[in-house]
Length: 558
Image 1: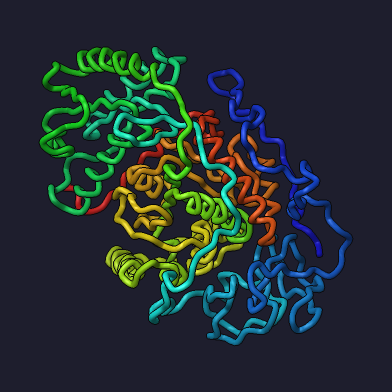
Image 2 (image 1 turned 90 degrees about the vertical axis):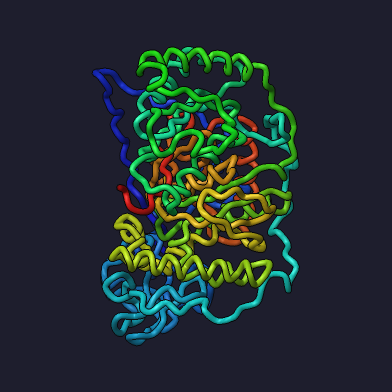
């Protein structure tokens, strides 16, 4: 087998205002994953090993022996001998690393399987050894998962390993909630007060830097809050999202900034009892007066936060949101199943896990429904898929439009294939609940939240729903961070980890077998507990997390 071979290029350090920018996240990592070759007990990532002499290339079948395709882990030139079910045949095309090769002949119109599941239909006859991608594979009418299925209640569930930690060092709020961070938040009710909120947060963050126990002062800016009809779905989603942030466990104190004439006034946002101190720009006499008044309030809040200290808290009180972005063919082979193991360990410890991105379970929703604790929970999954099919059709799109150009360059062809890899983030535990976007997650175990596939919007919904940690897998190299919820980035290959070391927290590249996924999953679980206990993620060190607050925009703007 010819392993995946990469060329690593030293990226130039960008110049900012005439000086060199030092990436603070490029310093020695605090809780990074296993670097290939650094631990003799763990296997090397094939993506980082030296090339073997030219010879027969054996496609790597990622999940099941019934698959019609296998992945090549190195660039394959047309005519290179390829070992398939039909014997050694010449590759019919140039095949990029990470892409699929047919391991058996597939007739036009027939289903093509990967992970033991259907990822699409052959657009034409596909001979063994042929490159399988967008030119000869597509999706047809979606019928997957429509038949009655069993529920997980019929079979007892066991995690793939036992949790290795039962406590993390967190903050205990007065109302009993557990937090992983201490932020003071400045929340604008409307886009018109967002600039003032940002001015307050930036000035206060500098003034109170170094305050014991304070992770920062942040502005929860957004571009909505007016021009939307009250009582509509879009209005409800925005208010639910902002309430979720204002009441988030990781926010120790919140100050609301209102313009004074918007639709989304504090009393409309919060109801009769506003749980946060509010300032109104028009009432106070303008920007400068509001900023000065806000800085006084934040100073009082910071003094109180400085008295808070971390203490041991059961891991069962953590809420973990699962994200993937910039996916490639290795996402479903290494990082996502490894994250699934870590998610299972948190569930086994009594914690809460949130899986979302509804367009990215399309074609794999039957697997979630099979794990539902009740028929009602399973039906709610199908109802979401039906809503998204109608929603995209009404807007002149289709769910198969989801895979991006980067996804396809990385070897993913159809939305069914992407979904079958993405759902692996959710591990194997029973599906206990299904909730709406930004709705509070209250059930222990795995909850599915209805979110778009767009990462910032999806993560925003999970944070609003109560996620106190985020885990984000990436194959192409997404740069993403979150506040007030810290986000741990997981690379699908060691090549990506080494190339973007300043952004990646954990290397899942070597975890290509189930045994290794479990071993790395345990280590990833421990890295998440470390982050919950205060170890900063790379994105936190870089300052990500305020521009990434993106509520789901829905409905007419009037």
